Image (cartoon, rainbow, N blue to C red; front, side, top):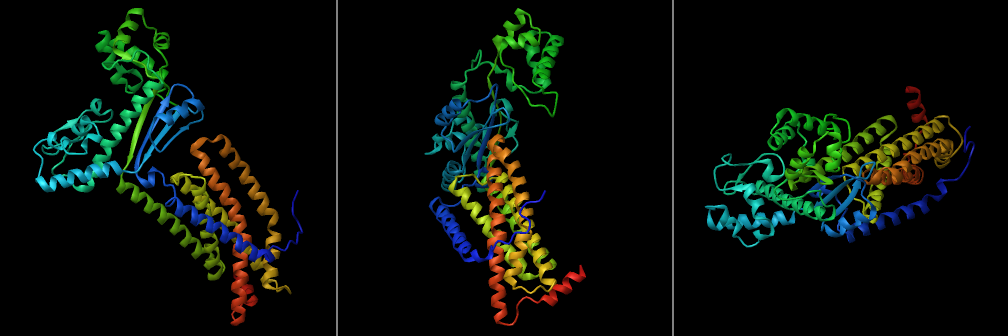
Length: 477
């Protein structure tokens, strides 16, 4: 079954109206970007921190609202099909830059620090914890001191010599200090909102141990029986799916559940309760995107877009002509700019996922344009008695059925992503949906009117479209 066959709608007569409409959308985009100081860049491009937290159960809307109100960060949203994971983001590195400036200025005045106490005594350093500074910096030779994962909550890291480190290196390490403090603050707030079972400062979080050897050693120390400790460690490992690289890692929900699946005796359970606590959430990790790295990512994303435009220009110029290539690129720039404006108006973060949406939308739009160009060339090469504008209008009508069916098919899939894909895919879906509408619109109401205006201008100079030339081009195919 075919739809919209044999239509003869006069699309091109609305070219000037579409021109005004496009200018209006571009003006709204410009105004929004100016008012908001540019696009809403994600941590990937603006730098900052990202913390991922896994919960035992789905996070309700009320719980999410409470977490947002307690945490003074830029963004908190759920991810995952079960919505049992939180992504917490804080953009920028203003505090890290301020602390770096304080240390650099003092280092220039003093020459060097004799001890970390002198660094801690500087005005402004009280904004971060003393322990974080001590775990990150030293006045000894680099490599002489290292910090264990137990102290930092992560992997073993070497301290940096605060007297010898460069300014850019100091900024990155200060960002680590800020992130470590922020992670500790997040953990403290979440502990208040989602209390742990059996929590005490001198105990260990059972859900934080994800290595079989670590579990075995810990249980051996508690129970005094290495063989039994290994059995319990393997039971936890299997229960949490830590032995399956493709499975979703779960959490131990309670001591009663642990006693059930690990077949613990009352005595074993009592000893384990005295040494461990069970937290209903786990900080899966924190990611730091430093100013230098974020700048490199932004540069590569921009280069990716520019390279895509250049390659498409070369392809269309080679297959059709340079004029068609230029018009297609103008239409693509029009689409990208207006979609960027939509992101600004809706306050959508421009992340790597959104950039992927931009590139996909650009590919969809250029594909539509190339099909129109092919139809236009067919009509012109057949020497029909029609004007250039009529050839373009006929090509649009002939391709109308394909355009609508392709667009609707893509929109159905994107609709599913929009409503059930979660926050991680929602922004991608919004960008793609806007890109499809704009790509279809620009192929008809941006590219075609521009080609007509260029042809009219060229005709006055005696350089209009040559049907003979296009006919020869078609024969070569």
